[in-house]
Image (cartoon, rainbow, N blue to C red; front, top):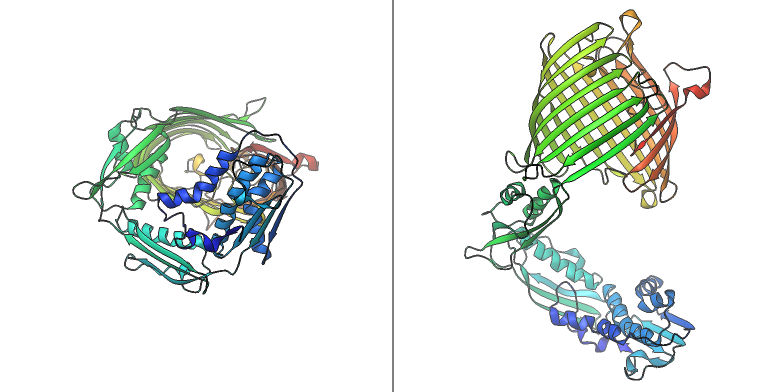
Length: 624
C-alpha cells in the first residue's frame, strides 16, 4: 500500500516523545526536515494550480492538521518551485504524523500525492519539472487511550499524574509532560541529576491502547558547591557572590537557584544572568554553579513631562549609575520642576539623591543613603525643606518589599501662621506588595503600599504620619480589551493639632493625583486671615473603565472622589468633592501618553462659564 501508514512506522513501537528521547530518536525525527533542506535548489518557477487537503472524521482535528501543514503554508507564501514543493511534501508526512500523535491518533494513514504520484515514491534524481496539483489525504483512525502507564520511581508523596491515567486520551505530549513533572519533583527533592534511565512505549492497534513505562534514575542527593563566575564583569566577583546568596553546602534546590539569579537581575547592573549546573559532581556530591553575566551599560538617564490647564507644566528627569563603586551600587539623582507657568508664581523645585547598596547586610537586605531638598509653593503654604536619611530595604519575595530607616528633616514654612521652622527626627517605614501583571499597563492584579512615619518635632513633640495606597485591576473580554481599575488612597497624621502640624504632613485634594476635574489642591479648610489649611485625614478614590479601541489607542472614562477631615477621621469639620471625565491613551511601548479631560461633579468653586471649569491633564503613563 502506498502512502505513509503510521502502523508500519517503527516509532509506534517506541513513541517519539521529544522530551524523553535520546539523540538517535531525535535524528530519526529530524531526517525528513534534513532531506527537505537538501532538496531545495534553484529551478524555474511554475504555477501551482491547487493543493487539496482532505481529512476524514472530526472537523476540529482537521483544523489542527491544516494549521500545522507545511504545504498549506507554502501555498500561502506563493512558493511554486518543484524541488521546494517536493521537499515540503516529504517533510509534511512527519509534521502531520506528529500532530496526529499529539491528538492521540497512532493508526493514521497519510497520502501525499504530487500530480497523482505518492511523494515518498518520487526518486530524488527524478524531480518533475513542474507541479500542478498536490493532494493530501489523511485518515486519522480511532483515537487511542492510555492503557497501562507507569513512571517509576516517584518522589514520596507525589500525586498520581491524572493526564496519563488509564482511559484518558493518549496524547503524546502527556507522556513527556508527566516525565518532566516527575523529574522536576526529584530535582525539587535535591536530586539535581535525575534523568530518564529507560522507557518502553507501545501502541496496541488492536485494542487502541497506548502503554507507557518510564524508569527514572534519581541520582544522588546533591549539595550546592561554589558559584563560579565564568565571564569577567565590572562588578567584583566577591560582590556578585554575596548578592546572589547561593547557599553553598545546602541541599540543591531549583527554587534557590532561581532566587539567586533574580537577586542579580534585581540590581539592574546586568543585561543578562545565566546560571548553569556543572555537569560533574564533586567527591561529596557537591555541584558547582557556573554563572555567566553580561554587564548593563552603567549610566542611564530619563525624563518625563506633564501638563495641566491649571497647574501648568511639570518636568522631571534623572541620572543613574548602576555600578558606582564596583559592587553593583546604584546611585540615582532626580530633579523635578512643577507649576511652570509664565509668572512662575507656583513653581516647585525638588532635588533628590539616593545610593542603594545590594546585600549590604546579607542576602536580600540592601542599605540605602538618601538626601532631598525642595522648594514647594502650595496654595496654602510655601516650604523650603532639606532631608537626609539612611536605612535598610528587605526583599521578602519578588512581590513583597519592606523598608525602614532613620531620618532628619528641616523645613522653613510660611503659611497663615507666619514663618516657622520645623526640626523632625523620624523613623520612616514602608511595605509594598505588587501583584500586577504589568506595572506599566496593568490589566489584572493589585498593588498595595503602606507608609508610616513616627516622628519627634523639637517644638511640638511626638506624632505619627501615615498613608495607604491601594490599586486593583480586572480585565475582561478578548485580550483584556476592557479593564476596570480602582485606586484608593488614605492618610492621616496623629499627635499634633492642625496648627502644630508641619504643612507638608497635612492633606489636600484636587488635581491629577487625587480628583481630576477639580482645581489642584482646592479642597482645604479656612484658616486665620482668610488663608487655607490642609486636613489631618484624607480618603480618595479614582475609578476608571479602560477600553482598548485599537492596538495603540485606548479610551478611558473616569470618576474621582476626595474627602478631607480637618482634625482626623473622628472629629472636626469635613469636606468632600468629586469629578469625572474622559481620556485618551496612546501606547508608546514605554507606557501610554495620557490625555484626560475632567469636569467637577460635586463640591468646589465653579465659574459661571462652563468651559472655564474644564481641567486638562497630559502626561506619560496611566493615571494609576
